[in-house]
Image 1 (cartoon, rainbow, N blue to C red):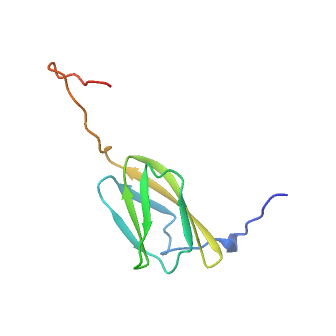
Image 2: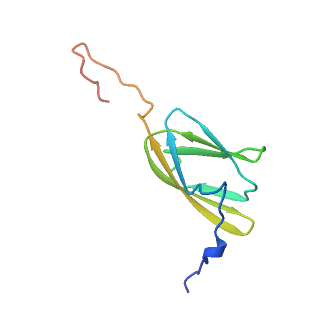
Image 3: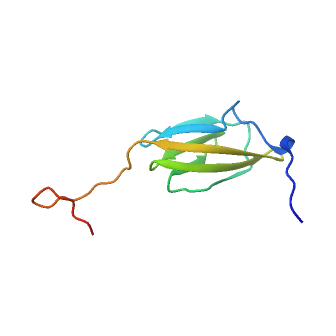
Amino acid sequence: MEAVVHRDDFLEFAGDAGLQDLEVGKEKFIHLSSLDWFEVEDPKVVAVEYMESGEILFTPLQPGRTLLLMYAEKKFAVWRLRVAGKALYSCMLNERGGVIDD
């Protein structure tokens, strides 16, 4: 048997926030009225924390896209998270200026 989810079962958090554009190195806070639980599809792209203050904290880690599933007040919400910017990593160079690959 297939589960049926109705449009009325979806929340609208903070207005039209279904798409969040983020940038590596810049954290972002959004206040939510309530949140029971959440799950990030790919936590290597964005780390997400729910704070006691009722805010959700996005920490973009690397460029990419992922989804955030949230549940509150018996309703679901799915946000698309897009992260722009350069990945935060470093590399070693050899004496000729080439990249040393491990």
